[in-house]
Image (cartoon, rainbow, N blue to C red; front, side, top):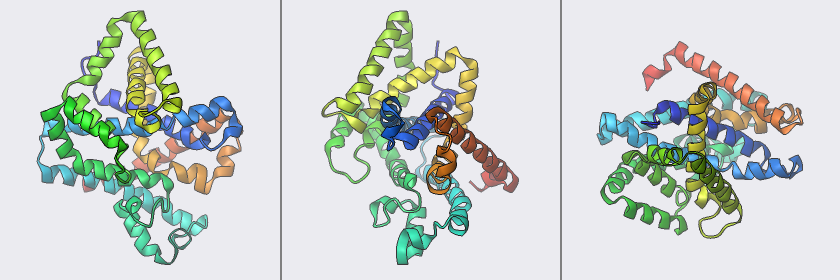
Length: 327
């Protein structure tokens, strides 16, 4: 029985999402890798929805213990977000500029300093900078906005519940730059935390035994198909529902296989680091090395292993400089 969707399960789900990110980025533009690899790579974009749901859930869980004091919340959360972002940039951008030919001038043009500063503030997706130095960093523009509106989302979700979720679902069809696809999954994550929803969902399937297992399987396969071929709530609009089903599968796997839970937790702990720098490894700096392994599974495992090793070194470096004391 699952009594609480705790930090260990959350980290395992982040680990699952991180592996989906790598699979998606490696193969979503490579149909030559085979039909199954290509289609699963397209489906793996659900990773963004999973991260957004978990972000809303995690923020709502954190204020249960610490309360909601706006100044403290923004200082703690945004500082931690920015400091990790800036550290990765400090490590990888100079390397790219000095050794890989990816200079600021080549990326931002004659306004290189201005462009880089805008990207480091996380506002780049709302400006001429767009994807800038690292295309994956588009997510920073999104998550900063979601963090900023979290206190309001938390209040409205607690006050109006399902009505507020319906309003957020309607926003999926409103052309709000960047964030319109992601306010809904973020609000759902907050809602699930406030009502212990993930535990309730998980237990609903568990109590039905084999029947519950097949219901979950059929629902997941249907959502995978619907995401690619449905209408209205298709594509990324379906990722809230598809992502929650994958989180439930990850929870089942983690509770059944202790070794699997430990492996996913370990990956999850490193997920934010790897999210920030993995594009440098497989795309900007060393694509010939990564894709030189030919087999899609081996390419994926090599990238995952390399990224984990780099992240472990970065975490060791943080300890040596007392990085956590700065945030």
